[in-house]
Structure formats: structure tokens, C-alpha cells
Length: 500
Image (cartoon, rainbow, N blue to C red; front, side, top):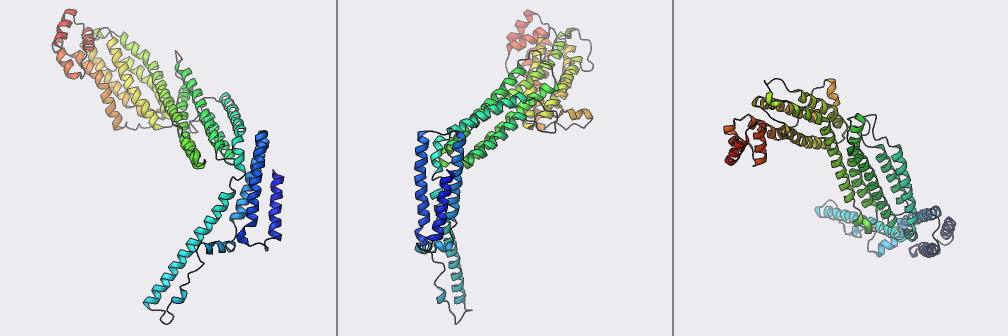
């Protein structure tokens, strides 16, 4: 192809040297000749490609040479001098200057009428200049429109093999990245996103640059589909890793495993943002026809689901960690509790278990919103777990209930510190107060446990009334369980239930 284009450029120079003075420039003989050459070349290329598609390297080389030639034609013909277009501008009814200069009053140049006329003349000259510049630009754009893609458009239907090559390269790259992925990071000050994701997106950007140099039409649209495919493939790999962590029946809390959970969530958030960036990039560069098809809503939804799945896995791992402490609580003989003292041992165990895990999530989750979401969700589920374990106890005396009520106060303090738990806190840094919104949420979630224990302390004569006043929702099952915890006889239980 380059020899064909070299011949055309030699012919163009020959015409410039020998025939420029023969034909009027407004006839655009050279331009018409190159346009006809391009049209014939388009036909020849189409005939060759319809007969047999060449190997991808030869196809891309021919396309690059064609795009280079088209660019040279556009630059050559759009940069014609203004002098060559004077005739076209005059024909368009845009003279080079206003012809009302003779109307100016030379006898009284300083009169108000003369000044007004000069100002009007100046305004007309300014308007003419603007119109001529706009018309000149429109002439240039006509040249651009004439030669842009005049030959290269023929290649578009055959660039499928190039996209297939990009697809195969992406698959090879993804496979290699996942072999090298360590699923953690040794330095918290660096990126908290999986390195494989960042490298994959870097590969995307290079691929976009390559494709933009070749086509902004169907091939570019096909490349967008390839990106969507590999975003989904990568998310599937993250899901598989998350499931592996969740299926661990006896998970051991370790910095590395918790970091992996955080980095999965961070990477899902990163990919969600990347989806927005990819949509914007393709919208800004693809041909108008394809713009309605540029969207990644499904991929962004998958990212959000993965974020939620990662946070749920974190909550589950902390629940697993605190379960032994709750089990120890249910084994205590609350019916024989003698006096109310300091917080119980199981509360200390709860605090230790939470302190081993939550600071890792605080430090490694890159988006504060995700840690806030974790805290809110964990708080709700933790207090439900606590209430359920109170109801699992055998018997609870009034003193035992008072001790549990004191323990609830300690647990409330522990939960209020949750948003500010950080490994930095181990160094003695002052804790930042929890947000007011979160404080209100803690009070709301703790209220059920406090209500339950206050009801347990109530004498049986006032039990039904107290339960009805403190409990918003009617629940005979819960009332019956409270009576069992208070060791109220069956016959009395039926009487009290009738009162309820």
C-alpha cells in the first residue's frame, strides 16, 4: 500500500510543479484528482479483502499506511492559503472589507455623525472578518470530511481478526496476572487495590490507544465488548476467592486473610469507578452511531454485589471469632449469681476478639463508606446475636439480669469505639469520637437487649405490663421465653399469657 501512496504523492508534487499556473486554483484539479484516486483505491482494497483476508499484521500495516496517507491529504488540502480561497469567499457574498468608507464625513471628522459612522464601519469590518474566518474554517472542514476515512473505512468490516488478537492477548495477560497475584500487600501506604486489577486496566488503556489509531467504528465497539467480558471474568475470579474464604469452616483470624477481604472490596470499588471511566472514554471517542450501545450498568451492579458480599464475609468472620465468648456466656450459672460486680469475663473476650479483627478492616478498607457500612451492619447483627444468646441461657435470676445489664453497658461502650478502632490506636493515639449518627444507632440497637433484661428484673406480678410497655411488637413467644428464664411455673405462665 505504501508504494501506491508514494506514487500518488509524487503525482501530486508533479502537478504542483508543472500545472499550478495552468489551471485556476479554484478548479481544485489536484484535489479532484486525489479524490478520484482515493475512490478507486477504496474499490481495489475492498475487492482484495473480499477475496481473502490477509494475516492481521499485514492488514494492520496496510490500514496504518492508509490512515497516514489520508491524514496527509487532509493536512495538504485543508491548509490551502486564504488567497487561494478569496474567490470562493467573494462568491459566498463575503467581501474582504466594507465599501462604505467613502461615506464618511471628511469635512467634519470630529462630528458626532462622523464618529458614529466610523464606529459602524469598524463594527461591519469586525463582522466581515468573523464571517470570513468562519467560512474559511467551513471550507477546511469540507476538505477534512472529503478525505477522512475515504479509503480506511473499507477496512472496518475486516478488523474482526484484530479484535480477536486483542481478546487472545487479554486472556493470556489475565491468566499470567492471576498466577502472580499474591492477594495481599506488604505496605499499607501503597495501593490497597489488587495489583492484578491495576495491571489489567493499564493493559486496557494501551489497547484503547492502539485501537483509536486504527478505527473509531465497529472495531472500537467490539473492543468495548472485549473489555466488558474481561471485567466480568475478573469479577468472577474475585467471587471465587471470596467464596473460598467464606467456606472455611474454622477460619483463623489472620492479618493476611483479612487484608485479602479488604482488597477484594477495594478492588470491586476500583473496578466500579473504572467502568464509569471506560464508558466516558468510549462515549467521547466512538462514532456517533455506536454511542447508544456504550453502557456498563451490569458490570457496575456486579461490583456493588461483590462489595456487599465482601462486607458480609467480614461480619461473618467477626461473628465466628466472638462465638466462643457468647458460648461461654450461655454456660454461666446466671440463676445462682450472687452479686453485681465488674464486667463479666465473656465481655473481655468479646472485646479482645473484636480488637483483633476490626482495626484491620479500618486500616485496609480504602473507602470510608465501606467501613461505615461494615460498622452499621455488624452492630445490628452483633446485638441480635447477643439477644439470641441471652434467650439461650437456662435460668436468669434478678441479680444475674442486673449483671447482664451492666455487661450491656460495657458492650455499648465497646460498640461506640468500633468506628475508631485502628491499629494506630495501639500506639496510644487519642480516639476520635464516633459520629453522632452512629451513636444514635448504637442506642437504638442496644435498646432491645436492655428492654429484655429490664423485663427479666421485673417482679412477675408486673411482668406482663412491663413487657407490653417496653416492647413495641407483640410477641407471645418472647414473653413465654422470658417467663421460662425467670423460672415461672407452667400454670402461672398460662395465667400471665392470658393477661397479655
